[in-house]
Image (cartoon, rainbow, N blue to C red):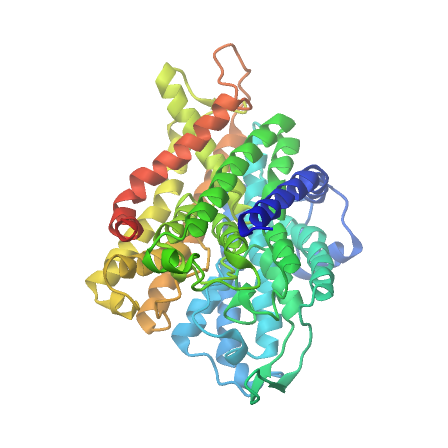
Length: 551
């Protein structure tokens, strides 16, 4: 079997599996977030924190709850790292330096999980488990909660209530993320992923010597980071390490877990607005963009563009030989189409155009299917922009799901879209203006690509990187931390503001002039608007970086 054939089978089986689980898992998540009955554990948590599960919140209160929870989480995680040398299971590690602790705390709370350090040689087990792994649950839960609040804005009318953040956070964590994480952990352990708490184990290397490794809760952290679509792993090489991703089978499973929740959330959207076909339309947009990205990334990597790849017959530099070029390209597309950031190969070693695709995936806003929750609300924002553009073209007040898209709504949508490009481009320019681009391994177009990738990843809360850049300095930790912080919470505020504005509206009956938003025409329009907006915004930067290198 050729590499190309194996890659096609790998992708097709993923597609079939995701299609098969879309409806049942989406229906399960719908029941989890829409049910009114509380479990005994949930009731205990609500009493402990003083939450009335029957009380709903306006968008402002919901947003303040999200921000307060995240602020406390950042502070706790920062302090946890700074005092880790006094904690149980510290493994004798020193406290994390202040700028590193700040960057890591912001990174994991914003669901970015950017790591400028080697986890197994920097963090003790307690910080890994009670700090980082906990955020791998609650930070994606925050994203799903915000997406559900936006959908409620479309589904409800004449009300300012969007649900209760604390109830949503608890249910999503306990009913969705935790059960699937347990099942996924068992599956990965069966596949050979290590799960232990050993430290200082001597293992014989292939050269006959010995080296000391630090074991840890790898299996559970691996499935949590994939399920929550965030890339922070026990080992800094993430899914390229044989302890985290030992076989092609586990590689397939990890990609499946990356896509599982984001691709199933459109089903929740359709159920909540009472029109399943609307959910299928959103899922179709996600699928088209994702499939195109996977195919194009594979094509660039399998073609081996460049002098050396063509000389040796394949673009093998930086690839994990266990997974070959195609499976590595598919994983790279999956991890940048979502806010995962895990890697099973070095994106910095991809061909110039293959590496460009990983950046383009993030520049799309990670909406195909995107992060847990953030992908759905990002694509719904793009759907709102598409409806507005279509309305202007025919001279009609734009409507989406019976809600008018007026000046207030389009301002929120536009501000949402503009935040990330501003952070990426200003951050990249600041790095060059201050001379901090010197930490890049390369000069010329590829050096620009390394800096551009870092800010694109941080601002989109992805977490992957071109490995040829050193970012564990005070300037980089501070700058990227700010990009992660603003890139997460400013868009989130505008999403909730839009949800509140929509929820207060009275429903507008559909008429003959209403644009059908479930048909292929609208699906194609959303795809087109998404691609065109990215091209107009980032094409000059891409032309100076990966496109120039490719040419």
